[in-house]
Length: 279
Length: 287
Image (tube, rainbow over all chains, first blue to last red; front, side, top):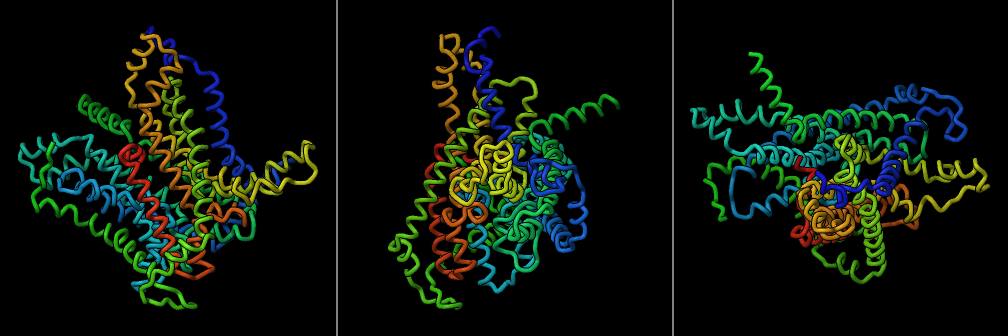
């Protein structure tokens, strides 16, 4: 297209690219610092004197930390399981059922995600205290369910909206009952959205501290435990566990990207077409 | 288009999400609202209803001062986040052809990377024996570490801007991606240069995303309490800390509930007022 030359989208934008590069440096420099510090035998990076894995070895001797790690995984898995059920049901509800005040309903569902975490934390703390529920794994889990549910719901409902009702109608016309339609038509089509949403919810749950901090008693998740470690200053051990968390998040996000968005749908369709051609 | 109400049977689907909403959102908020009218005497909570907590908020200048300080800082953070994220989104959306998906991922990865790790990173960079000071001392610019990086509003602003950039980037990028590219061709054919096309086409069409990003970053910055606790020091006590401390050291839950409810009212008012102008879903909760 010849007309591209001058309008926005046309020019090379050298200055913009330099600025953009600087922002990327700003975004990634802190993460690289954490990574480097975790391998440094001394506490300062300047005059780096060799690399060491000893902080990682120390991590594996810290039973409190290891326990907190498994607690986080446990809470994350339970939160994902519950949020997937509630969120998916919610997604079907908002995409298929019409009622007055639906806009308000959708906004209310979004609240736990849009409000500052401190508000969710303190309202849940007051709620549980009023019901005489002691602070435990249960209270933390409920905190995590509160913000992972809208995450799952919006991932799934946007997939349902883009799918449209035609496949479902076709299945019903061909004599499938609602259960068969769900199991053989709708579920396979939203499967990648469910996996992506689950991975996203787990990633967010794994890192969550703002709400958990209110709801934690003696049963601690990893971020709350690390927060406690920070009271004694930044230790190399903190950098080592931070690096592990960083890498874990990166892995989860990479998987998540495969399952969400339009790319996941084209992948699936292409895959099916390939199978049909082979047959 | 008029929407019909569905058949009652359809509403069975809504039961799980309604239970979730009542149990974890609506009822806890109601309990909090109720508690904000209680009062605290020593370690006990007095359940006689009183407006004392709200009276304290409106009469003691301490609270208003800290709230205004927090609002001002949150505005600064939102502006900084937009200054970083908007050009970035513009660049990725318009200037990059090859590797665009990769760059997009690089922009949103920080969103899902541990919040606590990012705080730790900034404490490391800004600290007295941190990266900046060590580097400056090593090249001989300074002899003593500079102390003005950490434990003040500057440290809070830089860390929260860092946190908020992806929250602005995503809605802005989503809005920019929706701009039909032939509009830009048309403006070019009509003789507009890049700046003119940016001001007359890209900016107005990108505005909903920009507003959404602004709201997100403002609310995040206003409500945060962990970053001020970790990097703010005594100068950096923000409204979030004030709320938090009522549940921590001060142990005045009713006052905390009232302050929390005020923060809630501010956040909901902003969301309500701006939902008409912004794209409400921001593009990152939906895929």
